[in-house]
Image (tube, rainbow, N blue to C red; front, side):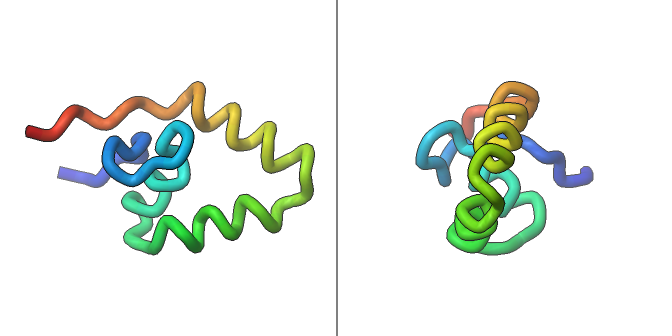
Length: 62
């Protein structure tokens, strides 16, 4: 089964967007958060809000 881009249910600060991107690419969530910090200010907020509203939630783990 392919890995799908979803919000993380375990590695999240606000909505789990950066954690989900990190899980998808197999990298550290800290590095994804740093990338979002270095994107110019209005763009990073817009991108994050779009991703937070369009990415599906990960299924709850037992």
